Image (tube, rainbow, N blue to C red; front, side, top):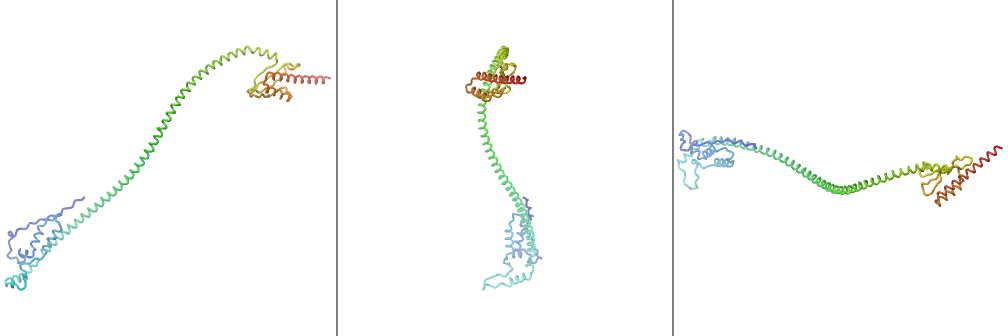
Length: 344
């Protein structure tokens, strides 16, 4: 806060009555006794010796002014006596009339000047004090507004901090729940990992065992293939001799699970003529897919039904060959008869 300027201090020492000689030429009203009679000298001494400092109270000055202005009985005034008392003397009356004729007794110029000076200084002091008070009030209001704004800012920051803290606690709680879920899931996964690892070890052991078994089977198959090849090499000449002697060969077709039976030596006029039939063995019920030359459908169905009923495949092959031979023979005879008829 701005420091208040100190009021001017004026101290005037008044000489004692013994040090001040009385001017014999001065009128009676200007004498010390005349001024004391009206209380003027006392007020003037107090006014001149007053110290103008902020610590001097206004009430003290006003009381001194009132006391100075208060009327006091003058020594020249008519003495007030009760009625019926002794009448004043002629000397006393002449003194009173002399004082009345002297206008200097009622000269208040010094008092008026002192009052004006006091009023001017008092007004300046009060104006300065009011100005300082107004400045202090304005500064206090500005500081109070600034403090209020700071307080509001701090309150908003506190509310924001509370909100942020609440959000932070919510985030921490949510992350704790997530952490607990993740830890539980991690334990589950670790348990599953242990189970999977154990299973993998078991599977690796089984794979190793299977590889060993496959290697053994592969070696066995290779050995068997070698044996079959040796046997095939031995059986091939015999098979060709058997086919040439019996006129019968059995080969698989391009279609899976089908066998083709081919017969020759069926026609006495052409021993190379071939007859064949193809049978499907993919299911428990046999089926004929092709027959050459064509047989009677009733006979063909009868032979197939007998095969499915008795499951005697060798008998079925013999009867099919006989049926085919009979059909070939019938065609040969018809062709010979036709050839003979044409020759005639």
